[in-house]
Image (cartoon, rainbow, N blue to C red):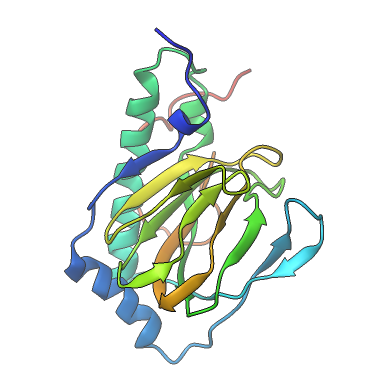
Length: 213
């Protein structure tokens, strides 16, 4: 059996959400009066802190869209670790380090928007990332890793999950040339963050695995 490659660690689930489910999430962004925020992080290749050109709103706990995102991410985390087990190559503690989703954000990329090459690990315990693509009626907006050396064109309802690392997992979203792209994103951590109340339950397997290297 051949050794796994970096691209093997990117897990893509096609058509995981229906159009109706995606529209519910988009409508939370467009149907609320909460202000749209922007985010900033360091450019992977220049080291310069760079502000995003997309806008973002946090999904509100208890909303229908929050529940769809939460259930989807939990299911895909479990599938991802089952998939990684098939390689018989990775440390068992990996199941405990990429486990709990954190910071559900709905993102809007209007025409001309993009996100620069960056990594998601910011030394705060982020070990993985997950994105849900919510529509397909746009052009451009390809998801790219490693300076465009590996590209993934996401369709409506596609879910993608991958590790986060401060050095290696550089990724970006290329410029939207027509239309508007919507996505829902989160980070994966070894333990729950303090984002949500006790009513939010996590259906993730692996919480009984100790982190021990």
